[in-house]
Length: 160
Image (cartoon, rainbow, N blue to C red; front, side):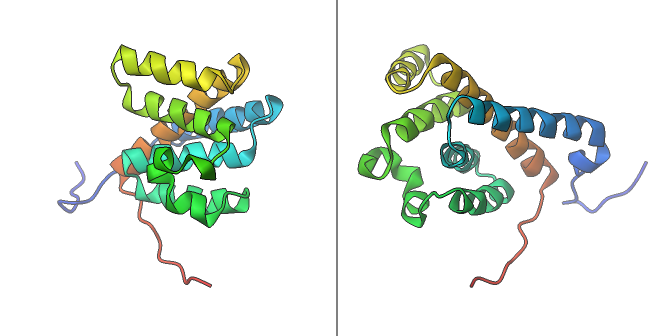
């Protein structure tokens, strides 16, 4: 039995790399499926950031906020993402629909709320897009849990 410091965590991605690689394969499949159903990288990164906010995953927030900017999400959209419902003018109908689904998948609210949000999202998304977005929220949620349980550190970067 190994002895670890009281606060040390097992990095489960390193401890079981085959499982982690399978999860990254799912993420790649989701990314490819998104492109095939006309969901932009920006929409997908908004979902990744919003789910990571809800799950309070610092590692994934750091990673996906940078990816979101690279994908064309504005700094303003990211700054107010936690309150997106109060600033709908900053997000397209499709982005709002994607965020609705992301929140439902992440929080799994009661059935009435789930039905309402699903119906609202359905006005702007095809069945294929809904499927991909649910997979995207599910996948980033899994990555959030890997990073949180492993306590992956956020590395300090110099801002430019």
